Structure formats: C-alpha cells, structure tokens
Length: 197
Figure 1 (cartoon, helix red, strand yellow):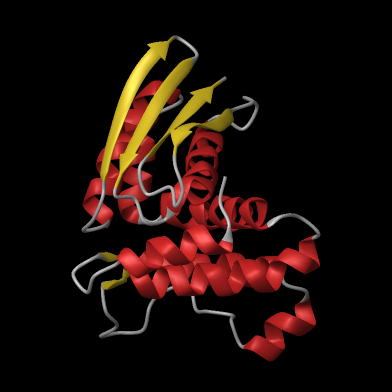
Figure 2 (tube, helix red, strand yellow):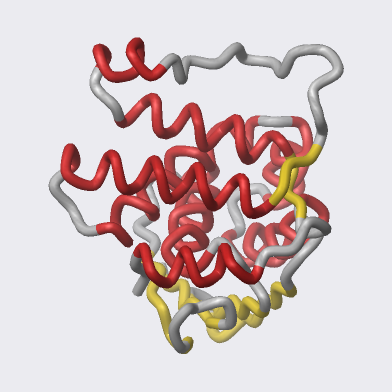
C-alpha cells in the first residue's frame, strides 16, 4: 500500500503553499516518541510539552511533516518488526489521539457522537480545514460501510487509514473498524479507502 519510495514521490510533489496545522506535526512527534523505547526517546529529545510555545507557527509545510513521518517510520520499522506501511499507519493511529482531543478535533467528535457515518462525513470537512492541499470526499455505501476518496493527498493511504481508524475508535472503542485501500495507483496521492464495521 505504501513504501518509502511512494512517500518520497509524494513529498517531491509538495509546494511551499502546501501546509498543515502545527498540531499534526506535534502529534506525530509525540506518536514517534511513544513508539520508541525510553532510552531512545531521551536520546532523541523528542518529548514535547503539551502546548506549543508562545509565538510558534500555527502551520507547517506538508513536506516537513512528510520528512518527519518518513524519518520516524524508517527508524521505528526495524524496532517494531513490521513493514513500512504498517509503521506509518501505526504512527498516524497514535497521532490521531492528540488531534481529536485538541479543540477543533473535539468539536468534530462532539458533533459526530457515536455515529461512524457522521464522524466520517465531518472528518472530511476537518481535513479540509486543517491543510491547504487535497480534496476529500465521503460516500455512504450502507449502514455499516462508507467510501472515502482522496485527491492530491500527500500523506497517502497508510497515514489516512491510521487517522480514520484512530478517529472512529475515539467514540466507539468497542466497535471493530476495518479500513482498506480500495483504489489507487503509486505513488498513491489519489486513492479511495473502504471503511466497514
């Protein structure tokens, strides 16, 4: 589904105007730190304060985010003993927690309640509000299935899978959600995910 070559190809497509909320960068750093052993966390100095320092930027470049994601996944891949795509997905899944606990994410979660369809629909809008690139579309397929379409999404299918699962489980911890790549061609900047539960 995803590989270092695919992520780097999407990274090459990023332009200076492609930005993402700083919250995403901070939550990814936190996710990387959580997956590293205590000694590596300390040596890498990745432990971050809960709130950004005053005067810190509100947005970061998508390229910077992808560089951090690639570095984290490449470092953790051998430590976790899983393939690159699974590591990217796991980092995104863990990073989803702080994103959905932040005020903008918490608002979406409060409105969505326990309805997965409502959460997926609102999540598409949240994505549009938190980055300056990409198009996201939600389609209800059945009571227990939905399709998410992504166009010009630089973060890729593994990352989107982790974030979607992480968001859905926040309000429905007992529910089993399955997210799989439905369509897409390398380097996977345009793709669709099928979500079932």
